[in-house]
Structures are given as structure tokens and as C-alpha cells.
Length: 297
Image (cartoon, rainbow, N blue to C red; front, top):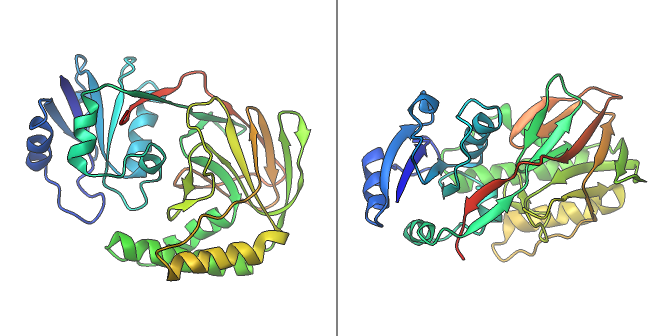
């Protein structure tokens, strides 16, 4: 088997050099060509690779896949293998890829494919895509607040800081009016958060969509209303103080076609903070082209 490794050497807290990664992957009988995603990897892409490997965090995965979706990285649809090396690794977590690296690498040889839906958003100046989620309310506010802070180097400390900041945001955020229609049914109201998600977790590793099926052709809309503020705040506090926490169940509505508008300008697409137009509506649907990830059987 031949693979092209696309690596972010700055992801996570551990040193993982080009040579070390190639040696580790080659030990499993996989020939490996290397590119640094911080450089011009698109020009180096190998046409005859059996699959590509993305070694990095959620941001790296999104960056690479957008190059394919935008047509900049050839038309070939490579199966995608992930080596999670970021902080939250929400995408890898949803694909059950959080074990030992050698076990993950060995599983690639079995070529077990998991289809993965891509969300498409119409209403911005250009068509936008997401792998994780598109949402309004407390999470984009958290992202904006975190940008003002000097984050610690250690992923665990970074996650703890994000949870503590989120706890404060949940306490102070004013619920906003949301115009929301899911498959023709109106769900408008005031919310602290509305997230259109395709994966299980969001932000600092919070599992808000435990029943997510990343390849079922539907998105899940996660709703946090004023009536859930205290309980959700308590859940965040439990995440900060206890390793043996339980996931928190929020109202979830599945849908294929979603129209959404928000009164606040804060919004996010995956891990990117964006500004949304106040009073403007966006239409979310599933892109007909899905991704193929290599996962353990």
C-alpha cells in the first residue's frame, strides 16, 4: 500500500517529526510519501497514492479537506486516514479513532470505510462547507473570548481554560431570537445556542450529539434554551472538576434542509469564527459528495 502523509508538525503537545512518523507508518507495511501542510503540499500530492493520511488536529483536517472540496487538490477522491494529534480531536473522536497510534495505523490495511457527510451553507458571499458544525450563540462567543487570551501549551490545560471560560459565557449570555426551520417545520424561539452538527462533540470535547451518525445523510440540530441554562452550567462545572463526568443530553432534531437566522452576529463554522449578517437567513443542506474515512472495523 502507498499513502501520502499530510502532517502538521505544530499540532498537539508532542514532538512528532517527519522521520519518526514515516518510520512508524512504514513498520506496518505502508509506503509513505511526506508533505508538511504548512507548506505547498497540494503541488506535491501523489496521484497514485492508495489513500492520504492527515496527521494533526481538527483544524488541519478541515484545512486539507477544504482544498479537495474547492477543487485545488486534484479531482481524485482519496480515502482519508487520520492520526489525531490536536487538542480536542472532535472529528477523530466521532470516528472512534482515539486509541493507540499503532493500532490505528494497522487498521488502515483492512480498508474499512466510514462515509462522512459534508454540510453545505448557502447565504454567505460564497458557498461554505463544514465537517463538524455550524452554529450561533455561546460557542462562537467562547471562541472570540479565547482569542483574547494567551493559551497554555499543554492540551489538557487548554481544554480546562476553555471549559472555565465557557462556564462564564453560559452564565452571562443573553438568549437570542432564532428563526429556525427544519425540513419545513418551524422551531423558532429564543436560545443560548443553536448548533447544526454532524459529529458527536464540539469545542473543548463536549459530547452534545451522542447519537450522531456521520454518514446518515442528515444533520442534528442541538438546541439550548433558557430553561436549560442552569443544568448546562452545572454540567460544564462537572466537566471541569471531575474526570468521571456524564454527557449532557440536549434537545436534538434531525434534518436534511435547515433554514436558520440569528439576531447576534457571532457565528462559527467548525473551528473558524465568522460574522453572520443580522436578520439574514442561511440554508444548510448535505453536499451530495461525501468523504470516505478509513476506520477500525
